[in-house]
Length: 278
Image (cartoon, rainbow, N blue to C red):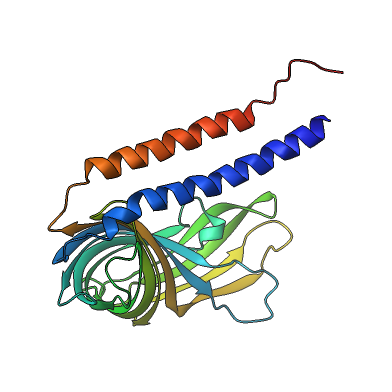
């Protein structure tokens, strides 16, 4: 009986979660139908980047992909209802040997990119979800100075601490071309949750290292590490359209009513107490 009650509660929670999303979309859809034509917008995003491991095949150890992150401030200027020009600034960090170190990796490089591009929104403005395709050009004028050196690290590898010597070379790419695809999900009339994925083809730049283990079962072995040129990036953020339109009182009341209704149903579903037990 306890197992059945638990499974029933889980099903109710899942159903109510879907219902909550549906209520929220319905509550905000009425605003999207009467949106003023947007002229420009601002958005702030956080991105996770991945550089795939492209080390020579046949080595006894696989290190894995490198990772990075970026914080971006972008502006969109709408030429019409479907086409927007974009420009912005991004500050990012990328790690070397991410899986062997804490955070982003044993070594980190910092970058500052100036961004320009365009987006195409194929659907009418009244739609709550606005998918888009586009592309960016990213220029880093400070990428001519790389990092290189040699250092000994203690790393946690295969459930044991190991010492290894790393000869590294890092340089950020000067120019990147990034086709992208994504969508804006309007939470209110002028405020949207934005997500996108892009593939960044880079000119210049590299992540390389030669690793030699000093102790453990791999002592004396040399590992050559390299990453592929293109990066993939997933971004999420918030976007505000201008001229901004205030949220109507009817929309606010409908939204809060939907939230309170779902919360009431949630607590009812999670209340598993019974007046009698056998």
